[in-house]
Amino acid sequence: MNFLAHVYLSRHDEELMVGQMLGDFLERGWRDRLPPRVVEGVNLHHKVDRFTDTHNVFARSRKRLGDDLRLYAGVLVDIFYDHFLAQSWARYHPAQPLPEFSAEVYATLERHSGSLTGRFLRVFPSMRAHDWLAGYARLEVIDRVLQGVSRRLSRPNPIPSGGLALRAHYAALEEDFHEFFPELEAFVGSLR
Image (cartoon, rainbow, N blue to C red; front, side, top):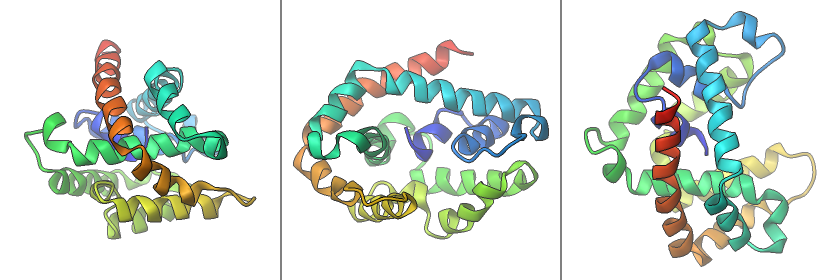
């Protein structure tokens, strides 16, 4: 799962949310610098990633993308699943519109800026300014996200063509997401 799903699964617990966001931006010595509840959020991030990466529905979604995208299919499906969560936000979180939730997340991260790593602080201004979380609902934003991920890799890759694969398999991937996500929610609920 990508950013939106991770913060959604934090259930408005600010320190868990911060840890969930930092899960992919850790630096040497991070565990000693962070408050214990933020560390729990980082650990939750990693548990969510392990559950997702080993789930049979997630594997089915990766296979849908074909051999050309095989090496990057996990990253792509993570992003696609955030798109489907954003698209169906009212189904999973009817009490709060996505733009309001997104603004709340950015405000929370701002309040906890002392716990944020340097790597995360470098991307956070762009994340907030361009509202990445709510933006996942739009396909053109997914295309930009894929371009950004591609540029961060050191070698040429087919990640930008992931948007075409998403469009080609949209209905099947969306169905996979709606089968998978309640199981992920149940898994996270079982950890509490």
